[in-house]
Length: 270
Image (tube, rainbow, N blue to C red; front, side, top):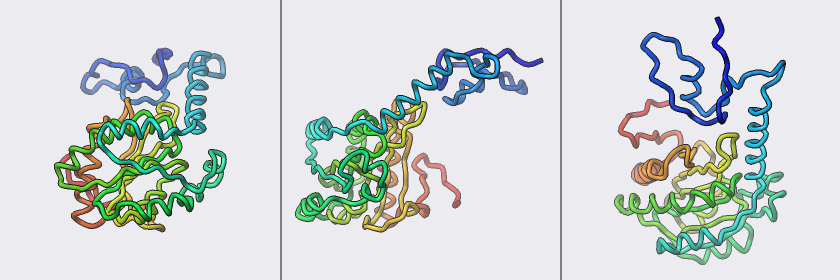
């Protein structure tokens, strides 16, 4: 007999469920408690019920809005100043959001004025933190400053010197390579808005690259992703980023050769 399908209060949310008995098959309620994915939404004829459909379209609209949202560096500059951090504001070659979305290559290089500004800035720190708007400026506004606040004491404990924080508009991940190269950084940590999803339109990611320079590939980076209120916490993310930064500087590499063992569990090579 098929179990009746009920519509959850909010598709995508994780609701508590009682511990399933050993040997007993998982119920739909058990499965919904394990994932934010939309499971067992029910049916209305050949389609889904109205409520799940409206909730899906609302989450889809939020994700689209997050991609097209404007980026305002000012509140981030203000927040970082309260942490006694100097900041530099730069921009990519993407003149506007339309160019940024249609021409990813423009978001990977600095405009000429920004490149000149960084070339004359303070040089030679262990780590340069770059905060870029990416595909979710909303995620950057929400999470970048609290993440930096959690990260700084961990980097200090590892005796890692941090340079001025660079705030970049119209940024793709690879923009950090040019920024790090111009500032003479041993390692760059790019904090950037991730592609919005239906359950998280404001997620932040962190990409670490040793010896940054133009032309680095994604295989030469480590990524800590899914940083948001319902995902990886600031403390958890900061611990992983600090561990990867310390090990990357010690081993002089990042990417596929550096496995995340920040929880003490050795990772097998891929």
